[in-house]
Image (cartoon, rainbow, N blue to C red; front, side):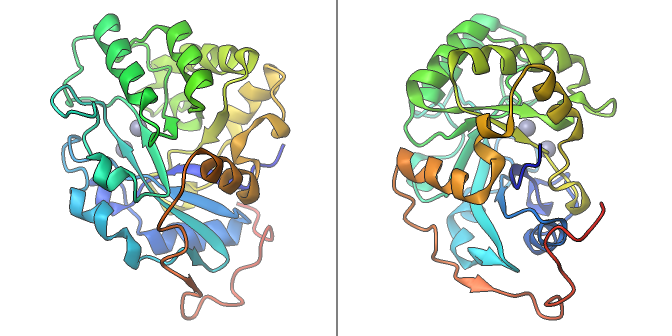
Length: 268
Ligand SMILES: [Zn+2]
Ligand SMILES: [Zn+2]
């Protein structure tokens, strides 16, 4: 299977990632990836991006070197905000893609399955939310699998199969079994599924190998994945709601890189 869109990438704005939006897009172009969602961490992650960062995303190209850039976020569930998310709806509604996921030191570290599930169901019922990232983080943030999968179907929310969760170096490596269980349950229930790289460095954009192997073992094919190509992603998000700023950044080539990129030419 070959997947041409990556719905989970981070830039230096996340505080612990090491590339810029431009570097992500140029790397994606060289690799033949048609679309990336830039999903920096929301403000409750230590050194996560400030709300103004997401607000001002309009200055970034919508298409750079032929790569469609969805200006997104990886927000966090919140116990204090009215919408249950650490970014206000006023900002979320302007983003092209809204992912939400649990992360350490954001108020959910006591492993309370009932509390986590309750807040996640509230998040998923928000029509502005597109994807739940790494839902299978059982060791750190346990949730009720059946209730979350059912909510994903009901609210048309993508459940991510996160490639990085399978990496031995990942803080979530202990969650590989549960991440697989989520994919299996989501697939059998007909919930939307996407594989994300969770790249925190440009050369890791579109890196899906382990998650793809897991998906294939479960009988999930390219046709079952929202991120199979840019057209499918765009159709999915636009069917869910209007994206008022989708094209506001225009289409650009980064100076000096034209001709240096060739879709699908690179071997990495
Ligand atoms: Zn991160
Ligand atoms: Zn994450």
